[in-house]
Amino acid sequence: MNKAAKSRLLYVLQCLWQSTDAEHYVTTAEILAYLKDNGIVCDRKTIPGDIEKQIGRASCRERVSTFV
Image (cartoon, rainbow, N blue to C red; front, side, top):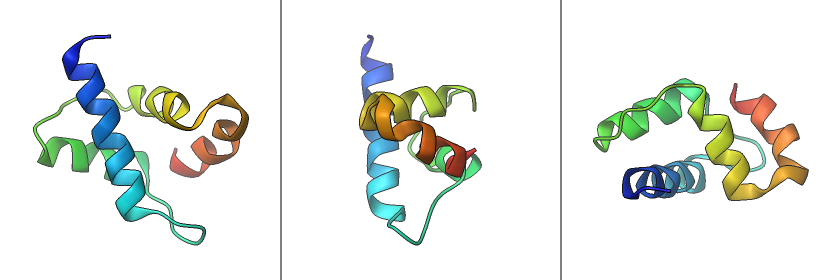
C-alpha cells in the first residue's frame, strides 16, 4: 500500500470519527468532499473498501449500506 492510500485511509477514519455516531451517518459524497477538502481525490467506489479495511468485514456489510 502506497503512502497516498495510507493517508486516504486515515482521512476516511477521521471523517467517520468526527461525523458519525449511532444516530448520524455520512454519505459517500460527504466523505469524498471531506477528502477533497484535505487534498485527496479518489473514486467513489474506493470508499466502501477503505471502510471495510478500517472496521473489518463482519460489521462492514451493515455500515457500508448506510454510507452508499
